[in-house]
Image (tube, rainbow, N blue to C red):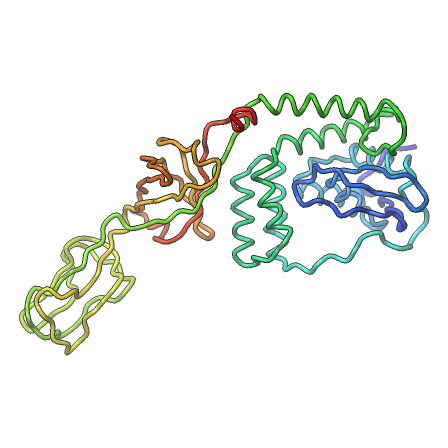
Length: 371
């Protein structure tokens, strides 16, 4: 049989295949499938994603390109081997048309799908922070998106290395000619294959128990201006004109308002957040007239909770996400359940408010985490 070429049309999966619900995660999980009248077989969830692309209409290169968009480093030889595996297990349909084994998916907007695919690709490539950022942005607009919520939770529990190992093992099996070594798609029947898989799994778990893995602690954070001052009326007078408005940037010495006895100036540069005087209003000595915040330097407070809080130390790097913006900061101090840092915001990149902090803590093995 000749090798698969880019312009070849791929076959399609049999319509009578029964598929268990695929677990929500990066795709390394095993899923049970069963052809009508056949034995139960196992596929990884990412293999099901590939099988879904086999619709009898797409060209091989289209399937490869779509797989890469989802973080699956697939090439034509690997796709060819995967299709041959399906054919060996009688999972490929013969002839055009026929029923589909896939359930109808929920309708997503283009933006939702793009963010989820970006998160999935980043997670599969080991870029955990980028994956979380994309999922958090998706959940801001679609908080009930179950797939996004479950993928977000799985990032805290699963290692991206486990997915990469599962993909590479499957790819090697697709490209081998010897049927007994094709463990990923092998039907469940008495053989030494399951024992070898169990031994390999036990070895991986043993290594994973003692080998340190990078960790990121996720926690809510608040950004506050480093300085806030209430400018008080310096005398009893009547306001003639107001020169500023809320959210306006002022420099030290700028006129804030003018009363019947002169001008009142800004004591320092900052952003006006509250104006309590208006034209024609009488003012009394000491009353708050204008509030100014110095947002060029922000104080970050991170609320630490959960098992990862004990691993947070001063000097570690935190990536703060506020909507579609992010900024890095170095933790200055950690006291109990709070971590603090100052952020240089002279360029006005971020504004005060609630944020999400991803703190890169020291790598630790499962054994160290359970001690």
